[in-house]
Image 1 (tube, rainbow over the protein chains, first blue to last red):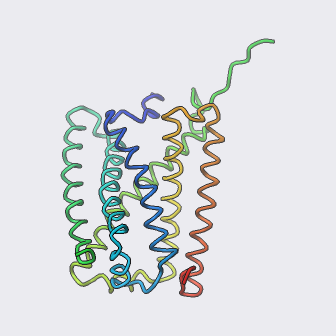
Image 2: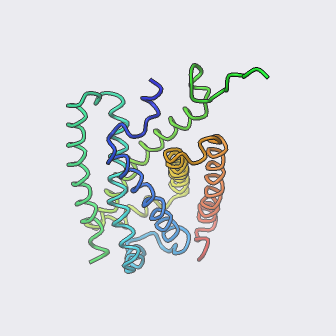
Image 3: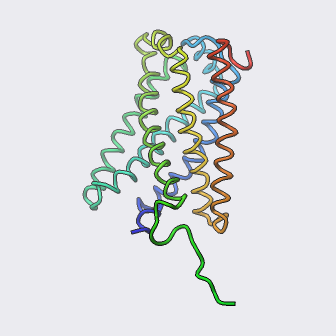
Length: 120
Length: 132
C-alpha cells in the first residue's frame, strides 16, 4: 500500500518522464514570467502593458512554452490524482487519459487564440 | 555492539507522523489549486478577445486580490520546490538525507516568498512596483 502511494511512475514511464521535463520547463519559464510581469516591468494593469511586454518575441515564446508545458503538467498531475480515486481500472484510466487529452488540446488552442491580440 | 533497527520515516505505522506524508498531501492540494488557477488564468487572458480585459484588470487591482496573488505564490513555490525534491529523490540524489533536502527546499520557499511579499506589500502600500 505504501509503495502504491509513493510510486511516482504508475501513470506510465513516458508520462513520468514528460512530467519531469515539463516541471523543469515550468520552473525556468515561470520564474521569467513572474520576474518580468511583477518585478521588472510593473506598469498600469491593462492590455497596453501586456502588449508592451509581449512585443518581445522571447517573452511571447516563454508564454507559449508555459501554456503547453503548464497544460500538460496540470492535466497529467490531475490524471495521477484521479487515478488514485475512481479511475483505478485500466478502462477507466484510459477513458480519463483520452478525455484529458481532448480537454488539454482544446485549452492549448483556446489559450493560443487568447494570446493572439497581443502577439499578432 | 548490538545492531539497532534503523528507524526510517517511510515504513510502517504512524504514516501521518512522517514529514513525507504531509509533503505529499500539500503537494497534491497545491497542485489542484494550480490546475484551477491555470484554467482561470487562460480564461481571464482570453477576455482580451472580447474587449473585456481592462475591465477585469480593474477588478483585480485591489489589495485583497494582491493578497490572494501572494497566497497563489505560496502554492507555486511550495509545489515547485517540493517538486525539485521529488525529482532529486527519483534520481536518488540526497536520499540518505531526505529530511535535510526537504527543509532546504522549504528554506528556498521562504526566501522566494519574502521577495514576492516585498513586491506585493510595496504595491499595496504605494501603488508602485519595486523597480518603477
